[in-house]
Each structure stands twice: as C-alpha cells, then as structure tokens.
Image (tube, rainbow, N blue to C red):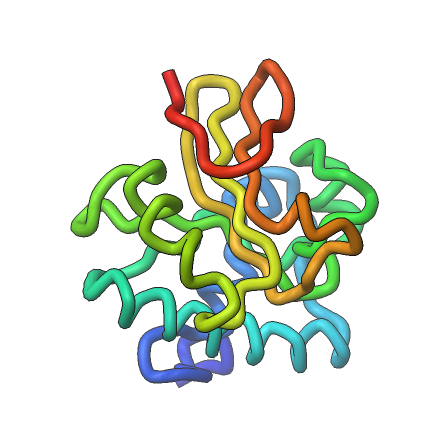
Length: 157
C-alpha cells in the first residue's frame, strides 16, 4: 500500500486530496508541503463530518493544489486549495450541488466549515468547502456563478 492509498481518515486518502487530472495531463508534481499536509488532515476530518451529515459518499473533484497547478486551473492566488484547507466536492447519491450546499449552509459552524461556496461556472457545478474562516463574515456562505458572487446559497440556472 502506498502513501497515496493509505486512509488518513475512515473514508479519505491523501491520494484523493491531491489527485488532479490537470496535473497529470500537464506533468505537474502536486506534492503538498509538510504544513499543507498537516492541514489536509484537518480538511479530511471536516469532509468526514460532511459525509456523515449527507449520509452519502463524497467525491473530491479538487483538493490540494500546488502553485503551478493552481495557476494551470485558473485558481486565485489566495486559494485555500494551495494551503491544503479546501476541497471541491460532489455527492451524487445525496443530490445536486445546490441540495448539498442548502443542507450544509445552516451547519457550517457545527461541521467546522470555514467557508461554503456553491459554484456554478462554465457549465459545471460543485461545492467548495474550506476549513479557513474568511475575514468578512458575509463571505462565509456564498454562491459564485459566471455572473459573479452572491451572498448565501442561490439557485443555479
């Protein structure tokens, strides 16, 4: 068993948290720093609470991103993905990203979610969860679409 397949929590591996098809395609190493690795454990623990709340498997579509990968995917330079504090998720057995976000929004503090973002951009939808609480409390639960950011969880068209 390699380190990437070893479970760091009951349902998540480090491999799931660092996997990236973009990194593979572009031959980018996506190896977390020791500090990011420590934070990834906290992110995985938060994801366990999310999984338990949803009572459904959670699929990580984007976890840790090193600087080169973050640039390649067009991530912001302040992205919590770069510090190991964020994951983009879906849970098809539970429901749509909108349904996931609506369920999690009132529970962010209980679940240890610092920021919850329902994202619907370029025809794709997912939920971004981070362990870091943003400086502005109003940015804690938001929706981001091609049209911009809105407070709270909004219906995606």
